[in-house]
Amino acid sequence: MSIQALQKIIDSSRRVVFFGGAGVSTESGIPDFRSKDGLYNQKYKYPPEVMLSRSFFDTHPKEFFDFYRDKLLPEGVKPNKAHLKLAEMEKAGRLSAVVTQNIDGLHQAAGSKNVFELHGSVHRNYCMDCGKFYTSDYIKNSEGVPRCECGGVIKPDVVLYEEGLDNATVTGALREISSADTLIVAGTSLSVYPAAGFLDYFRGKNLVLINRDPTPADSRAQLVIRGKVGEVLDGIKV
Image (cartoon, rainbow, N blue to C red; front, side, top):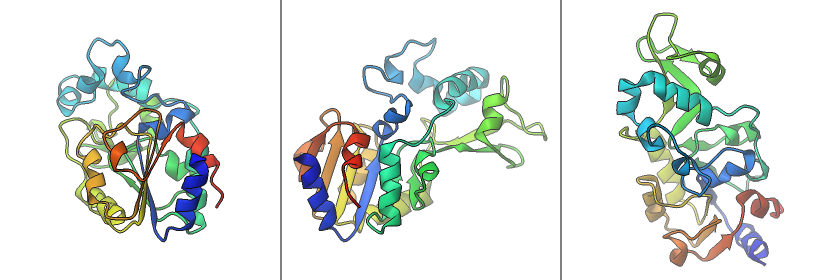
C-alpha cells in the first residue's frame, strides 16, 4: 500500500528530487555509520569520527589511511536497486536531481547524471601540493600514506569532520530541493548537520521519507515508509 501511495505521488509530480544518506548504499554492502552494525558501533583504537577528522588526517595520516582503505574503499561494490531505479527515473524525465550524503559514487555508476555529492567522493583524490588527480584504485593499492610523484601527500576529495561543505555543491543542491514539488528523503537518520537542515529549504507539496528507523522529520512528511530503500524504489514503475 505504501509503494502504491508513493507511485501516486510520483505520477502526479512535476519535479521530483531525491535526497539520500548511507542507508541507500547498505544494500550494496557498504556499512552505514549509526545503526547497530554501523561503523560507530565497531571497536577501533580511535573512534571512527576521530579518525575521519581533518585534524587526525593531518596528525596521524598513516592511521587515517589504514582505516580509510579498510572501511571506505570496499572492493566489488556495485549499484543496488535504489541507485538503478533513480537513474532510470532521471533518464525518463521523472527525477530532476539526486542529492547524496554518500561518497561511494554509486549513483553515477548506475547512470545518474545530475548528482550533488555533499560530502565529496572517494573517486576523486588530489595531491595537496601540485593538485594532480589520482583514482581510488591508486589509493587502495598504495601503502602507508599515498604520495604524488612530486612528493606531496594525496588527499581524498571527501569532506572530513572539521571541514566545510563545498559552496557550489551546496548551492546547487539547495536550488534543486527548493524548486521541487516532491522530495523523497531516504536512508538517512537526519541527525547530521548541515545536511539534515536541507529539508528546511523544501517548499513543495510532498515530503516522502523512506527509512528503516524513525527520523526527526517523520511528523512533517506526507508519506513515511519503513523499509529498505532499494526494495521500496524497485516497486516503482517509471
